[in-house]
Image (tube, rainbow, N blue to C red; front, side, top):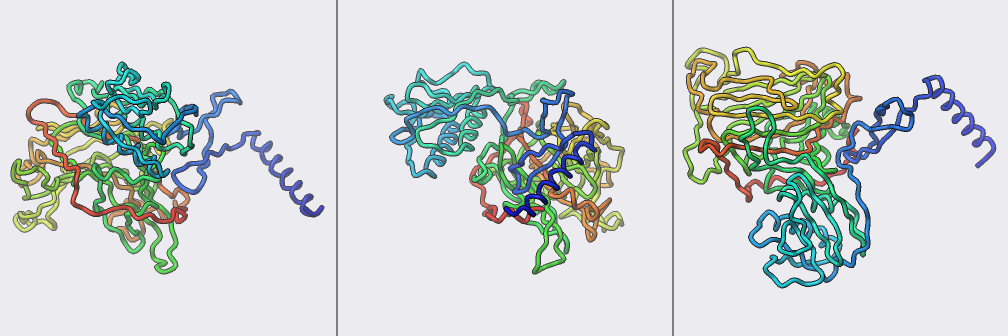
Length: 487
């Protein structure tokens, strides 16, 4: 390096140091965010001790140890006989090793025990740990065996999928023991009788697709000249144990009108429909001017296998929440979209659509909260007479679905099978509905909507129903596209 260049570098370093002193010596810490190819810069939390720095978003991180292990060559994967969920977990692990050109067979624990085994769940082998609580998981090496343990099929699966997020090293295994927040019951007052029936912890590794036996794409919100919708990985991805939805700022030299790219909805429309229950997500949701993320759904497609005739006079829209470009407010709503009945012509109004006409509650985060960078719980409770919305275990709004709000007295649609989904949209200058726009707020993009898990609970009351289709007919799949378009 020339003397001139060295002098310039020294001057720059001196200027930076002076700038930090002028700012009170408080340096902004940076932490890579694997959700994109960019680095996320955020003010660190400081408890008053200089050595203590906590980042806002530490989800997906956990302590582990790398230990010696003779596998995986020559091993078999053992699952409890008849446990289909453990078999699915085993298939995930089998695929992980297959990518390393290692082929492993999956067998039940009814087979004779051999020395080189990978145990999944509560097998009859003595090395499988069977006394863990339902929220606990553990991965360990016992002798020559690699053992995945959990107190429930969900935590066993989480243990396996967390393992697939590690880089493969021949002759090494990663071990860990964790207490999660998973529970088969709810502790909220009035919901104690609900039991876990379906969900997704989104534990897949980044190179995996989402679980197509549980999710698909729904083109539920249209684009504009400025907004392009996509199924691509640049807007819908998996990583760090989360479903990640991005609304991004972009520049398309072939179509300069396009300014934003947003994802199609991720939904269980064709994989799971349900009637009554409590559905909750743990999520980090974007709250800022121009952002339009949502957790919503409505009338389902027919996967009931002949169990009843689909009601189609109108289809419902259930908005568990929409964030209308607010920095603190969660907005719920209900809608009817008339199909076979000409509501507009019958009652002399402008469109075949109505929405809740009475007062509805909103949820506002407090001034000391930052929901854009914090994870919160967003819940939807559904009974034969009510639909209620929750935030962080607090029921803040209830819709009475026993009485119609419009001129059509029928509320049958709100007692029919439904599904839910997640959107991460924006308001642009050419949006037909725009309480505000993201135009002057593009520095906040990409808008990040991260969903840690989705869990559905129901009562055994003879009224609640769930319909599951693990072989959906839709062929929508994410296109592997370059993530560099995120800005």
